Image (cartoon, rainbow, N blue to C red; front, top):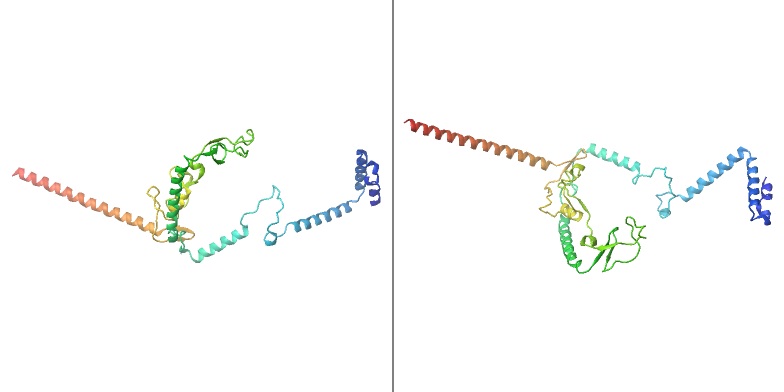
Length: 303
């Protein structure tokens, strides 16, 4: 059979190498020879081929945990194959079990490390004030520079150019850039184009209420992220009130409980009740005084 394949191979006919007829004859003869092979031989051939291919893949895809192969690119995954989790599921399950066991062993736990316990980090309060002052000085200096030195900003992308005329490098990635051959469309820039501060929602109580729900998107103030960072680190601003604690919070079965706020609520209730009692006493005394005056005046008239 091998002799027949070699005999009908195109390589034995030097004159017919470039002719299409020779290629068609060779393919037809190979198809006939393959059709005469028994199914067992086909199965063994396929089995050996899969074994070789799997071993080849194993050599190309070493263990990902091995630091020696950390720079080797991994093979492409199929679209139907599920992507792995950033953290393996076994590690997540082990962490959950450990947290559950620690909660059972110690259901009420005092959080000692700031800022998780609601207290400020003393070493970072001074740094937060420095960052806030540096932001203010940076913006004030930029407001002086930008009117004098021109700034150009593309209308369709985030490209910025310093100068009277924008550059002509075609690197625009904005909408409909293909119709303009990636040419930038320049306009006069601002201070916000030179330095951009992303914004975020302000948290009044970052430990007691760390989440902002969707219904609060219009009621919660939006501030620059660097300002919110400084406020949570220890900067006090009148426009952005933040709850400051003097005692750490507790973790009860994985939930944060602030006994200081509970005590404050009880004190407020007691003060309100005391004030209401005092008001009631004052009203009673004033009403009694008026009644006595009226009785005295009526008694004088009778006389």
